[in-house]
Each structure stands twice: as C-alpha cells, then as structure tokens.
Amino acid sequence: MTLSPLRLRLLVASLLAVSFLGALDHTIVSTSIATIAGSLGALEQLSWIMVGYTLAATVMLPIAGKLGDILGPRRVFLTSLVLFLAASLVCGFAPGLGWLVAARVVQGASSAGLQLMSQTIVARVTSPRQRPRYLAIIGAAFPIAIVVGPVLGGLIVDFWGWPWVFWVNVPVGLVALLLAVVAVPKLPGGAHPRFDVAGSIVFTVSLVALVLGVTWITDERLATAGLGCFAFAAIGIAAFFVIELRSPAPMIPPSLFANRTIAACLGLSAIIGVGLFAITSYLPTYFQMAYRTSATVSGLVPIATVLGMLVSNLATGFLVARTGRYRPYPIAGTALGASGLLTMAILPAGLPLWVPMAVMAVVGIGTGGFMNLIFAVVQSAAPRESLGVVTATTNLVRQVGATVGTAMIGGLVGFGVAAALPAGVDAAGLTPQVVHGSTAEVQTAVAAVYHDVFSPIFLVLACVYAVGILAAVLLPQGRLSDEPSPVAAVEPQAEPV
Image (cartoon, rainbow, N blue to C red; front, side):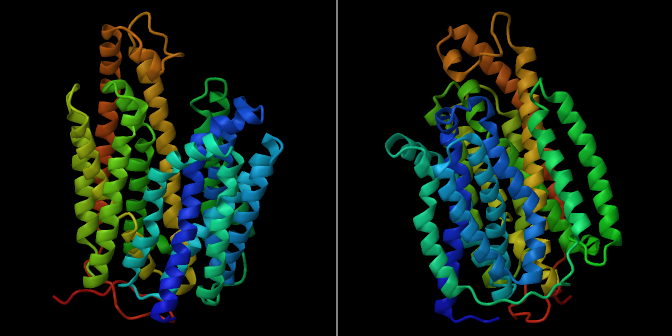
C-alpha cells in the first residue's frame, strides 16, 4: 500500500511515539522499583514488578505476530495501545503488589503488540528499500529510552511520586492513539485464519519455565527449582517444534528457517541479545568496582555505548535506503563489535575512564549498524502473510538471548567475585559504597578481582560477535528493492554478475 508523504510522516510520528512509550516504560520503572515495592510493603517480591512485564512481553511476541498476520496489524496495534494505557492507569492506582504485577503483565503483553505491529506496519506500507530508514527512526526510541528513562524515573519519583511513573504514559499515549487512528491504514490480514492453539499453549508454558529458570537460578534458595524449570523448558521447546512440524497453521512456520536470509538474520538478532544487551546492565557495577568511579560517572559508559548505537543505527538506515545495499553493514558491524569487546577483555586495569568509554562506543556503533537493519532484510525475504510472524521471531530470539545471557553473566560475576575476594571481605554485603569507604589496599584488591572476573566474560562475548561475522557473511549478495510488493515480498534482488 502506498501512502501520501504527509500521511507517511504522521504514521512514522505515531509509531515513534508509541515505540518510545513502550521502551521508556521499561527503563523508567527500573529506577523507581525499590521505592514502589517499599511503598506497597513488598520489598522481598520487588523483582516480580520487572519479571512480570518481561515474561509477558516475551511470551506474547509470537502470538501477537500471528494475530497481526490473521487480523491485520492495525487492529492488533490499536488494541494493544488501548490495553497499554488502561494498564498504566491501573498500575498507578494499584493498592498492593498483586494488582501491580497483574497490571504489569498486561502492560508487557500489550507492549509486545506495540513493538511488533510498529515494525510490521512499516513493512506493509513501504518498499524494501524504504524500510531501513523508517525502521531506524522508530528503532531510535530504544537507545533514547535507555539514556532518558532512569533519569526521568528518578525525577518523577522525587518530585511527583511513584504512581506518575505509570500515569505519565497516558497523555503521551492518547496523543499517539489519535495520530494512529488517523494515520495507520486499514491493512487486511492474509494468513490462514486457523490458530495454532496447541503450539501457543506449549510455547507459552515453555517460555514461562525458561524465564523463571533464568530468574531463579542465581538465587541459592530457588536454584533447584530453577534447574527444574530449565529441564521442563527444554522438553517443552522440543515438543513445540514437533507440534509446529505437524500443524496445518503453525505459529512459527519451520519453513521460514530454511530461508538463508531469514536464518542469518535470526542469528544476528540472537547475537545482539547475548553479545551486548546481556552485558549492558552490568557495566555500571563493573566500572564502580574496577575503576572506582561514582554511580553517576559509571553511567557514562553505557550512555556512550547507546549513543554510538543510536548514531550508527540512523546513519545505516538512511544509507541503505539510498543505495539498497545492506550486506556490508552487518559484516562491518559484527567485526567492530568483536574488536571492541576483545579490546575490553585485554585492557589493563587503572586506565582513564575515557578509554573504555571509547571502546564501548565502538561496540555500540558496530551493533547499531545492523540492529534494526536486519528487520528490513528479514521482512524482504518473507511472504506478506508471514510478516508478523517473522518479525516476531526476530525479536523473540533477541529477547531470549538477552534474558539467558543476562542470567549467565550475573551468575558468573556473583560466583567469580565471591570466590576471589580477599580474606575479611564479605561478599554478601559488598557494595560500591562499602568498597569506596574501605582502605586503599581493599579497593585495589576488589578492583583487581572485578577486572579479572570480567575480562574472560568480555572475551567470550567477543567470540559471540565473531560468530556473528560468519552469520553476516552468509547473507546473500544483493540490494533491497525500491518497488512495493503488494502481494508478497521477495528475496533481495541479486546483483548482476
């Protein structure tokens, strides 16, 4: 479908506002989670405020993608936005943790629909060559939210109170809803109307078990239950693939994985989740301990990473839209990411903070070069009736990779630091504030421990990005077409020999 330039601008503005809303909601709550849990008298269960959101968002990804293909992305998008705003209101009025977690589950599920349908709508109204530009603009919401969210969350809690962390979504969301009603065209579904109920149930239960296992495995009291969840998830995922192979209308068609372009893009998406997203949340603690910085200063490194990601994401989107060439960017991006993480692994202790800032900015630049581009490429290789499914699957492997990677890194850091601390230093009460108030000898010893624990982690993540280079090389040569595909999308056009 071809839109007028004005309507396309309105559409992009609406999708950008909604994408920013969904991304900001996750980052803004992270700053105020302790305040919220304390106000509700539930500090021991505060993790469920975030886990409920993440779990629902992860589980809902393939379901929302399939619903978009069946019902049309406009219906799913508008319904998700209304549910998101209603859940935001309930979160602010929640009288207890149970109400809050239930509302956060609805928020997470609806945010998955918003994220997916934004990407799917762009795919349905633009040509393959136009998509990288608009997907880059919409995708800019995520890195901006990472930078803005924690600061904004702290200010809101300090001056307005924690309910406004959720209520601030409502005025922005209503404006976005009005724009969406006007600008989002009616896009019919086209997939088989039958829904894979058995596959959906098994997939949902398996993902719940996987996320719970990842969440519990680092807790000594719940480690056994976490291992049981992992075993259950493994059996469930195997059963899910068997169901999908036999289903007449599978939720994730196995035939998609036989497509070389789609398989390579899924690999690249997983590498971003495991290789970068999983380590980002641990960078502030690493620099507070290894470089002995304050909490405020330690945040400069992830900000530098995110800003590098933002700049290269926008630049790549516009360059690919002009030339149609896409393959060089994932190759160069994964190579930059691998080089940067390898450099982090071999950096000696005691360097000025600007050095790792510059190195992680390079990692961000490399990742941003293909972070959203792969969605345009994978959509160009999928039939129109499977756009929602293939977009959902690409998001899903990134989300699962980040979740599993984060848990693994957390476990390695916790075990490695506790085992290597010098005698007399209690691992249970070790905080940056405690270390900074200790003697110079203790500070030096703890800094060396954190440096030695994180170095091999950075090395492993560099190897993950090196595998990404192979995935990028597997992408076929070609250019994204500038012609709209009203019936079905096609493989990227092969270049003449």
